[in-house]
Length: 226
Image (cartoon, rainbow, N blue to C red):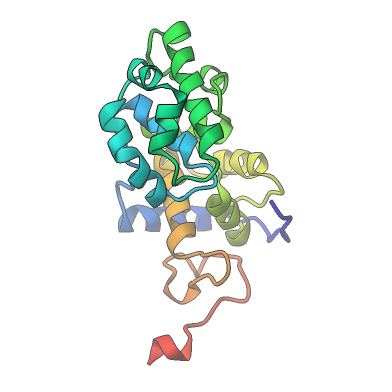
């Protein structure tokens, strides 16, 4: 990810205001990937790398009906998995990882998805971000998965300036009040996806603009105003 100029970190009162605002607007934020159980969530997150949630959902709806368990996925085979996810970028490598991680879940975890980061990261195709998503969504652990949206928001706002995803993650874990940690991941990603956009953030409709360090704020265009 490209380096960014770091704004001054936000004071604790501003951080509290930001997350209390997120909570008021959306008390129970949800991820946009569709899944049936812990296994299908894990597969969906692996497939979502460099792909949109919408695209992954379209590809996995039938796949998850046919193969909702590691055993069913292994029975489908790598080529069978490929046939269902051809519309997703890097589908061949992703199909290989899904097949291999399914087999490893059977061989080493009794077909169950483990609930620790170490065990998840030992699975093919699973990195820290993927592990954090599964731990947060399914196992309700207060983890923060830093994707490009969250990396951008953490830096722009001053919530967690950092030059790497890990630095932003670690800063957020220290900065976000404990009572907000479970949902912080979703609030920030959804904010980055729909409001604090990469090319032109919509500051004019941002609920946390008054505390954000991003300058200059993007004004409402004349076309939109009319």
